[in-house]
Length: 453
Image 1 (cartoon, rainbow, N blue to C red):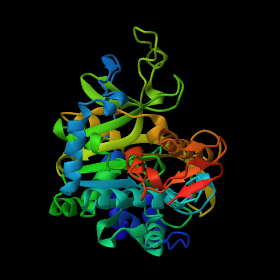
Image 2: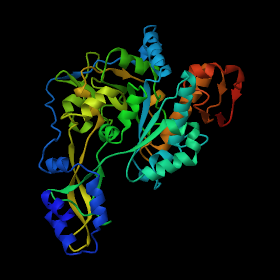
Image 3: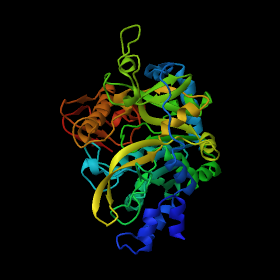
Image 4: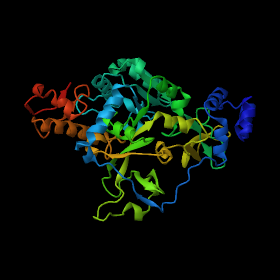
């Protein structure tokens, strides 16, 4: 009985509303909310268990980083070749985290449908799908794409892919799965009644990707298909180099459980977490957790000591994910206070101070026995679209995309005017070397906006 389940969770206030027939409480919504969550976990979270404990930042030093310059060195060839071999053998999957909405970008739709390409306005989803398609063609083996959605945007995301014929991908190679949800609670540990008649639920964070892979059967699918490695990235970065063979090879040959790409911070005060070594373990230290002494620390040459900014791009072994989701080991939950739109006991709209629980994918890093950290150039691989204007915006991302493609053309001897916007389809080139194979078909001079399909 629903009321009894609520009382077992210490949520008598909602049970009483159901018993008295309060019209603003919808039994069907409450049942749906409770059905999708782990009751024991919710009980333990409200009791303060499984919560993240910030390590004392006393034994901290910069993490060893493979520099960006390594990619052009002779030694890189071995790792790149190994990554390409894993792609040819079908051992790698791409995983995009796409549970967010584009509300900050001015649309009421999944963020992945936002048009970001500088000339054609292709959506984030299309750019990522075309990269996966090009990668599959290049290596002669389909790279499966796993798309993590949310309860709010799952149907819209599936419809968007279907409405665009999966952007050329075989639908059998695209797998959608839904992120987990958790109820928010008041500071006193009581569930919050949403203005829609159910519980106020929040996504369980990007760390919930791992549990969702297991819950939705995706790990079984990966195992059946022979997938050993997962390339993880977030939907809002159109410059991401999906399943970069060098990154795959470095990670796999060194037996890492989870690895990361980093970019140089733009300055001491850029609000991005950094990857560092804390008490001998690789982990992300969030900007808000850094003391001034750490944030402004200098190395022996007077340069920023902690510069390795987290780009949210990772390689993760499938069996490592299985170990994190199939036993007593779990990612810790972060506790965040926020104002929550709710209903009071009389059904009136109010705002209450509440707590949401979420996990972060990077908290798996210190659980891996080995980890590789690879530096990449921001202008080549990191142009997130988080805001409509200003920093990390649609405008800045489009400029960075155009500049990258412009640099490819210039390096290949094409004269490009200073004002022209350049866009090169991923189906033509994933990198400059791919474009070099078509150099004879390129124009000698470009003096207007151009899309190269």
